[in-house]
Image (cartoon, rainbow, N blue to C red; front, side):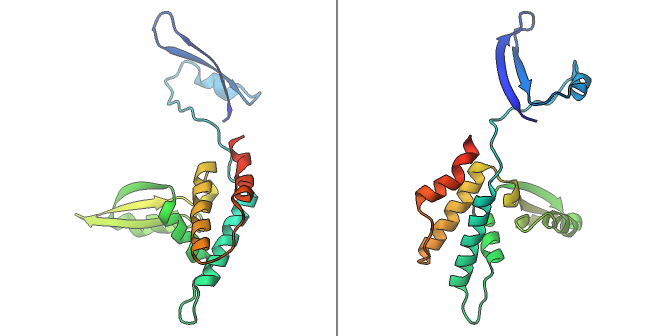
Length: 177
């Protein structure tokens, strides 16, 4: 749900902060049901999802890097490059799971998409410490910018021509608006 914080004051009786929100919807039925209830509240600055142009450029870079790194005895795919980039800078959720549920969790998590990866960190007492990485389809502006920056750096290291910084900034600029 999106909206704006329109007012902040101090409640006279409780001496606690009181905020007023303007929500981007005309539907209030759901909100009325919440009135007076104890709520978990989280407010964050809105960030636009990544643009298709930035996503397309991400895959162009992955493809060029893969073609440059592929040699006759070792084929590297653009998917390999993408997954490696996700593991290098991606957003993840650390977890500890029992060994007996690990395979099923991994299957379900990775079914969500190519960038949804599970990396095993350690094992102890029939438990596995893992990092569950989110695919770039969930990334906000900052996260996608980091992914593209990493891929641009890798491309340049391989002598691959990339867009200028101004062109890359243009792809990403609309996210912070």
